[in-house]
Image (cartoon, rainbow, N blue to C red):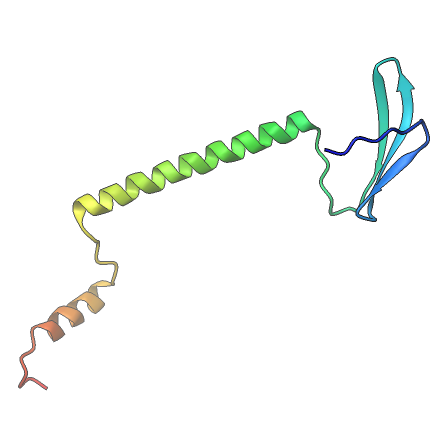
Length: 101
């Protein structure tokens, strides 16, 4: 982590696009001002961590659902996803003998 000392009115520039400026010091609080491109996302850490935890929980739940579905498929065998006419054509062609061409 990079540590910098700045006085009120001073700033740091990140990636030639994001400015973080010390606006005010009041007791133990520091007021910061940010200038950043419209496509940048800025979140307070506690909001970022909450969103991250919710996303990770959603991914874990999705993985659990996928595993359960895969287990069901393994237990029942593969399903024939072809339409009825395709399946019939396949069965008919499988039942043809070598002289049926």
